[in-house]
Length: 480
Image (cartoon, rainbow, N blue to C red; front, side, top):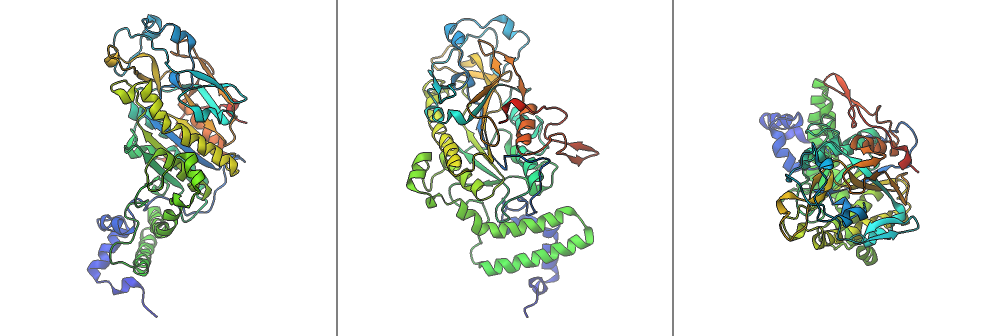
């Protein structure tokens, strides 16, 4: 019988691997061997039950990084169009601070036409012809508001409940609460399009003070799905298996000696990395889809786009991934260049989003997965009803950051379809009906998944923390 692999190691090499197993300096080298992205990123635990029965079992969160102009997409304001070009009223500017606008700005009405869509008659912009076709699945919330008007803190507030880094992300709370449905795939997967990381950086999908097993695994739709997960040149799969067995034995020794919970986590992480070598490439291979499905999403085999990522999100959820996070850069419509013009620039950007998101909703519904999948769409804040100060005298039309009101939508997962909630004033400066703070929305998302947000907690530094901090109320009106 062949002795365990680590018995062949020299004492110096054994100490090196033991250092890696306990998080020492050798771990740096081993990340390259065993999967830098894969290590520390899935729950190989049994399924856990939520606080109460719920429809939603999965989440697909589509974040439009930079924040789309809600007044040009979802929140139709005829009065603002009528007063276009006039000075913004002093009463709505008093005491307000804006990112790039000083003095008295000019009101800016939308240049887009709005269409009554679906049986519900939701008003949607002409930028969204495909979403118009699934309007009866959408749950629009026009009365969102936040405390932050700069990108990174606003994004962190949405995802972690705090504008500062260090707290667990929404995806981490979900996987901490529900566990994983597929032991061969990460429970929490992150896909990024348009080539730029989210404004909040990796903290937007990090585990904070939760065990590292709950952080998001960033996958790629082009090239190797997970960096460093493939076998290095000259290493066979059987040799890698022997190496992993040796590491596991060393980790077990460390666990028995120290009893540190992260050591057990590391064991499961290495095992997951090994299984991911075959499971992840399979689920990320969209060439297995029909041409009709690829065309519906606008996805291209071998490409890298939001369309590809939307299709991958469906494949991942279908395979049991608990939470899929999509970040898409390029929604910061200040008007500093043609791509940021709320006219043609917005139309062109929406062409990359509208079709695949509508296809995702249809596809999930056709497969019987929409009821159990909560789709969330939105940015980190809204855009001003007036022209952005730096570009106010130019030919390009843009809007500044605005935290006081914005629109998000949901679909599936136990939310009401063909429904809109909350209202803003005639000029889009403030919420006048059913305000929904970011913390209220977080509480509602967790409720859709079967959690009382006040009871999904983790003790850290002497107190119990939760996603909603000490705030938040479930918006019952949004639930089917």
